[in-house]
Length: 119
Image (cartoon, rainbow, N blue to C red):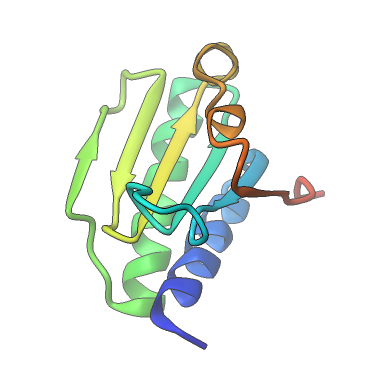
């Protein structure tokens, strides 16, 4: 399995660990000029959960792949946290912000996969 797919799987696992909702992967590998290969989006129910999701993604990716973020935007009080892993961009939103930015639909030519919510 290639490094990018391992990274995507680690990000999703990190989100699932903290019960991220509506986890979605956006495969942009077929789009010329795309800003990344994959975008992974999820939402949480509170700012505290967003922070926990971000921490879990960071820890799971680091332990599973050795990768570190190139940058992170947002903090413990933000309704959106973005994490840049180069080939993979991670977006963790509150539901209202996710609906407003509607990233899944901005990249309509990509392959969008919704992952079932954890039980």
